[in-house]
Amino acid sequence: MEYIKLIVTDMDGTFLNSSHEMSPEFSDVYKELKKRNILFVPASGRQMPGITHYFGDIESEIGFIAENGGYVVYKDQELFADTLEYEHIVEIIKTVREIPGAKAVLSAKKYAYYETDDQQFVDFFSKYYTQNMKKDDLTEKIDDTAFKIAVYHPDGSEKYLYPALKKFEALGLEVVISGAHWLDVMNKDINKGNALKILQKSLGISAENTMAFGDYMNDIEMLKNAKYSYAMKNAHPNVKQIANFEASTNDSFGVLKTIKDFLQLN
Image 1 (cartoon, rainbow, N blue to C red):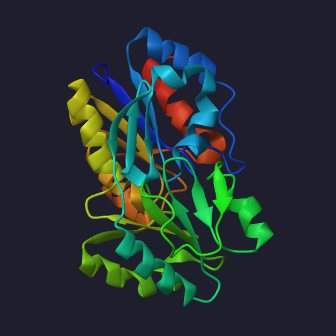
Image 2: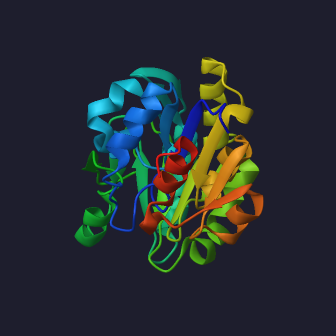
Image 3: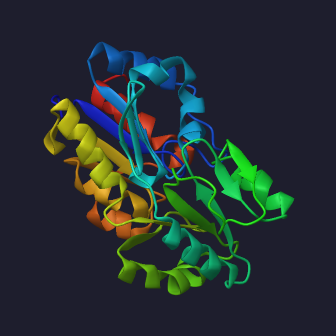
């Protein structure tokens, strides 16, 4: 493991605890990573501002994978940005409206757009999509930089969202369960794994030199592109099945514990 050059980690359920907090030890651990020329990269289904606000002091020094792989930035330079076709957006939103209890968020470069009047939901999703704006109708042409549609259901994404939205896979779209209550619809081959490949190729870093952490199904492709792949102890069983190693839970800051072990800081 002395040859690791890149550490990439999911945020919610992985790097952050259940209160969406990062470990107070991160600053000291990051200084050691920087000293050893190891790049740190958060990778999330969140929009970019929902990730970068955790890393304000070092934002220009690290890389970011946002929108489940739809947006990749390295040291303030955009490496990749994907966009959904307007026709697909219309059909997806119409389908979401037919699912009782479901709510959609259209995530674009500057803003995440929503149409619901449910303020409790707005307050909730604003933790992940910090730059957001209400629109009367998400089927209207709003923003041509939309990366994905994130769909929420209070009773579970696997049971209530995927069965209704999996039909969009036949149109060449990715339909991925990104959390217990969230599902994302994106263009084909948009995932954290391919985003990681873009970053690795740009920097000349191989999977053999990469450590990755994740907890849910939208992390699987990313973990497959890292030799040192870790599923969190609280991870979905499918994630544990493909990861090479296991880290302790996100609430015990298992990512930082593993990195500290690697750096021999414990």
